[in-house]
Image (cartoon, rainbow, N blue to C red; front, side, top):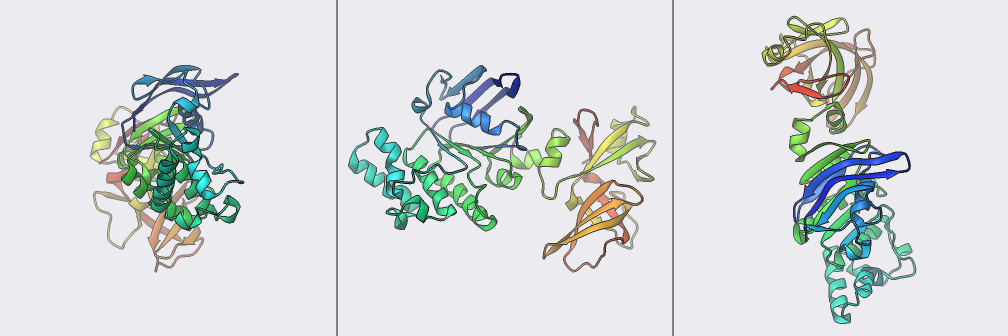
Length: 367
């Protein structure tokens, strides 16, 4: 196992800067996830660590050793690709053994290691089959097993679950987390799926357009996003972003207004009549009761646009009355509502975020 350090890594292709000034350090044995929308530079970072791409500038270290000039085969890292990249003419056993044979390991050691890995991944009964005889989930396990069998210092995974169906993806994600707990190999994982990122990671690295937006534990990044992009990207359904104007004592949203919590009012007192983006997650919005809102909530009126039953709950997509400002929230599974209905919803003001519109920078959260 090893720690991995990136120090101001930039990768440029002609006039396109794929990643810029990327710096972070993955401690020995931790599981870090690079997450962000397609094209944000996640896979470029992974390929640079693996040695499949070269950094234009900056320094890359594995166990405090500079590896910029080391070829991929000398970095002692193992990579699992999105398309599995199994050798179709080889059996599962031969695929698992391939890396060890290339390193001229002892035959007895290879055989023992292949069976250990196959047993841990529950694919021992598949050792004589060819890849074309396997399901997608089984092929994914073989690809993981081939990387694990080598016992590399660093494990790199590039969207390894994206080709699986939903249920199998959930099952394999759980198995992957358990596997990392057992083997403890330093792991860097790339995904655009924020649920995968949140459930797997010791630390998240959130990226946009080749630059790091925030690094932290999943819960910390979710609770205290550095900017509007991070806030809106993490969470399902995503955070609601509402354009508002700060006025004396309230935020004005179209023709409606909500009172401003004292903690926010004090910090924005010098910004009268300025525009901001308010953020609030769907779970912090509820259908208003007949009682008056408390000091910690605010009521606004919406018109239902779409209802999506999800079993135990209903996802409601609405707009503020007489506007195109969208607001998503959840209702109990037994709730009855219809498109076009108008109703009041309550916002939990203790969970209200404020973002600077032009930069997207997070100014504060009211709690």
